[in-house]
Image 1 (cartoon, rainbow, N blue to C red):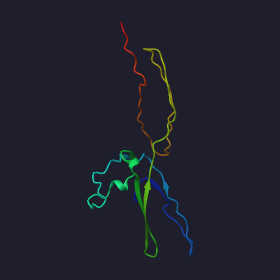
Image 2: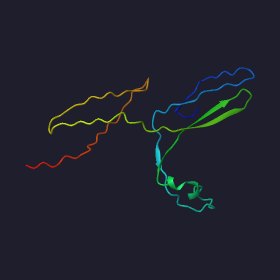
Image 3: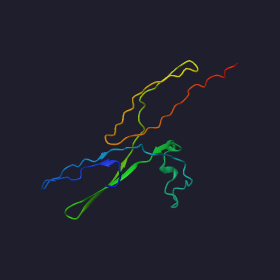
Image 4: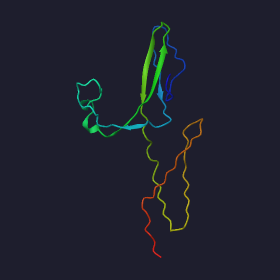
Length: 143
């Protein structure tokens, strides 16, 4: 297996003269990266210099963001000398919001709010980046 985002069994037993299914699980630990789709510079469909042309991208997709797939490959050698090779693509979207926290306090009065943050990984610690946003700038006080 080439690619860190997939899990599959180390061994699969196939009974004589039959077949079996092997489960490959997509297990992303990070979100897929994104890139901006831009208007191709070469719009001549007969040009061999640029494989992408305007006809290959729908007009509603221009200047939008697309996710870059997380790639992997699985190579399965068979006892008869043949091999199975599968290319794997997975997309990991941003998580949904866990909620909105609004705190109001009088000026110059500190306030604290505790929230619970869960680690869904079973064998690894996680670090989180915390961002705060002031939705309304305070007015300038006069003396």
